[in-house]
Image (tube, rainbow, N blue to C red; front, side, top):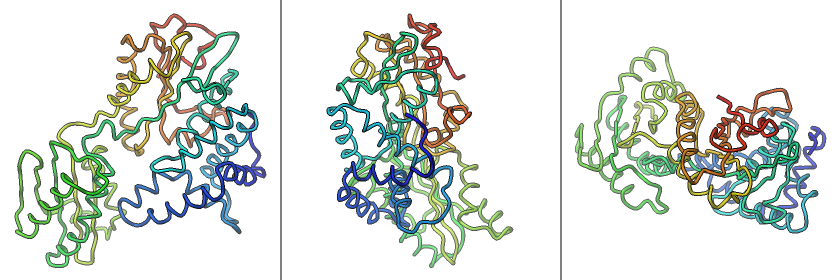
Length: 406
């Protein structure tokens, strides 16, 4: 596919909506509008569906603000989907339409499709011919790369970082939305700055209806506050209420706001902590929570690779697992990269029997998905790890796709 000119982007966006179905798109946007809002859960929903909401914003009649770099990137990916549809077989177009329909239902979104589109674009920039065998032929893998008569299968997979957490972010959002009115009442009766630190040895998992343990933890927090106790401990949770000295020193002296406070709390508690801030005229109440053990996001990626390698790769050709790690924010992703946790797990995985057909593993997040292309003279940013034990790992023709990035 060729780069899309800015002047063609609005037409491409409308063409994508037409392929999804305008009534389906409008119904989805109405659903997201109802769910997104100033609540913790609403902000989480907005993050999950940021691609779709950006596309809808750019479709609004009379929009005359200049396109940002991020806007252009999202629109360009949408345009590539439209261009791809014209190049697929009839069966491929049907499968693409099924993929788009799934993105408009439930927790579905455009991330898996855009991840595949971006992966294909990167490989073309590296000199490979790219076939969409998954769509055209129903192959278990997504892409077939060919360069100098050397071929490799690529399976594009999305794994949520939540799979490696005992304390789920969605569950945390549900808890904060439930407890926030109680904290507002507490601050009205007890002006000041407070910090409630929580350790949850059994974690806190997502529930659809707020049933235990979410409801039980909410009950314990409100009971602890109503009885004006400073601590509450058992095997499921360790709660401790203290003055928020960090906020008192920094917000009081500098006239800070909640927006100023959150980065300071993040530096204090680290990227794995779950933080919530309730502000009122009478003061501020911070909740900071951790699970009983460290997050194992990289371990979850390892487990997912072990599950899919035998089923998504045929084993008759070199295989590449293009892993997309969803539900991470910038600090957490940067920590995963800096601490080499993904590299360690990927290299461990490639020593296992289930990885015998895997010549390389790549890892990316939304930061890479929406970042610059190699075609623009910038590095892709993805992490890439070659399997030195694979027979084709040292082939020069495959090197651009499999050479380790670190």
